Length: 123
Image 1 (cartoon, rainbow, N blue to C red):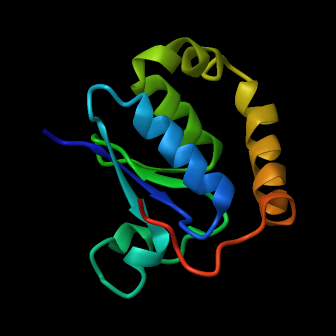
Image 2: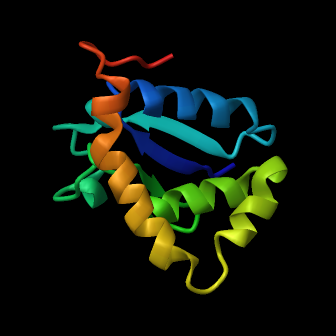
């Protein structure tokens, strides 16, 4: 079974707990989580080269599309049955005009608010 692959910052406490929460609700096991720290220099994920993977969450969808930031969050919500309605609401026309800047603003400030782990957390 093909899965979405989500790339997250394993040194970001907020990102780590978002991953743990989404994993809890991934009843259909549709999402594989990969720490950005594990991708660097492996050559295994060439579609991530040149992308700001430590600044924004990224995803390779089952369909082969690369998404980042707000688009990734929206796709994750659409992939999880309990959150599909929220994902649909975030898909309405114009929502990304607010959602994308809001996501970037939050992402830019997350280390100030939540700190940073010295070492990546993979569990």
